[in-house]
Amino acid sequence: MGERFVNIDRETTMMFPVDMREWLPEDHLVHFIVDAVNQINISGFKVNKRGSGSEQFPPEMMLSLLIYSYVTGRFGSRTIEAATYTDVALRYICADTVHPDHSVICAFRKDNKELFEETFTKVLLLARQMKKLKKVGGISVDGTKERANASKHKAVSYRRAGEIIEELRGEVEELVKMAEDADGRGLEEGLKIPEEIKRREDRVAALALARKEMERIYAEAEEEGSKTGKKLDEYQHNFTDSDSRIMKVGKGHFEQCYNAELAVDTEGSMLILGGYVTQNGNDKKELEPIVSSVPGEVREVSNVSADTGFYSEAAVAKVEKINDEGKREGPEVYCAVEKSHHGRTADDLKKKPPMGRPPENMSKKEKMARKLKTKKGKGIYKKRKETVEPVFGIIKHIMGFRQFMLRGIDKVNTEWELVKVAYNFKRLHNIIGRRSLSECMATG
Image (cartoon, rainbow, N blue to C red):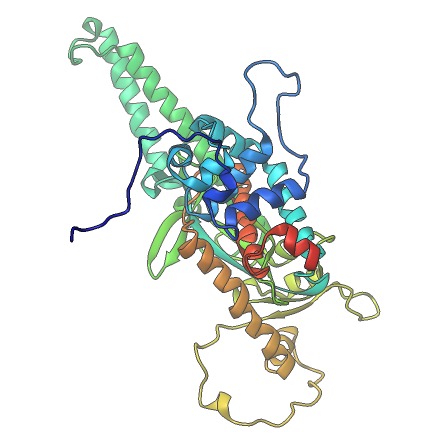
């Protein structure tokens, strides 16, 4: 008896239109993204309202395309364009009829920060509507270094920039003398003295501007009393992305980076509730800004947990808002004041008596350390390691986002907004048990 195989027929034409919804399982993430984007009724996108020129792609389609691409680890516009031909989910989003050009994808991503911000808030309100996100509760905050779309080898220090300027000025003087002497004999064939002089003068102008920017940053740090430990000569400017900074990303390892901040729900959902990107290499100034980044209509923050990198008495005071009567009007902060050891020490295992009231002469820092040792403090701070840290892990290791595609602090913040949106769609889909949106809205 001969072998029997399934017949694979790629040549017979389909006689009836296919239902593209059947290309993928009912519980597939792409169905949830498309349905949710339509449900939240977005409006903050940029379009050609005059209707002139070529037909525009629907913003809901472009938004769904970017969200699903970022969830599945596709970040480059050319990669996304290519996937609209080969990935069934992206073909479904584009109705299997259109394939946006990479330049269109890049422009839509770059120009629609307001749209991503609106989507971020509305998907969280959708989670509230489905009773998956509490109105009042805690957040955990943290920051991570994300590589900029620039090489650290394209950076120059303040001192080295000054040395190069002097070298270039010397070359310009030499070229002027060559021009005056026998019409520039001595140059290689095809080179022209005026062009060579202009090239060097343009470079001098660019380096001079870079030095002025470094002087400005240094002066601001001095005025604010920031202890960066750097002298002006050590400050650096990157010519590929001048807004990025050299940051420490490991033991003795430095990269051209931005510092990406997140605020994550600690009440069970693990949804991202706020976040932004900063040029600051550490988190000392970020406690109040990251708490303020949480939209008030999404979460009334009751407490904040943060690691020692965020701690300063001034930062805690800004968040807690202690009034003249000594009452706290803002969320309560639980912030480590010193680096904690991994795991538990033998002393941690010992049963300890209640600590009682704190002594009157304790400093604010000592009071914070004491608060974190209470049962309540331990419970709240423990949630930081169980929420915000895993979220960064998912973004970097599951979604694969480790480097910004865009350049400049404004555009990088736009892209981080998209990352936050993509993560929240993925997370919310898991929270509702991968059910359809309509089913979840009907049954809760």
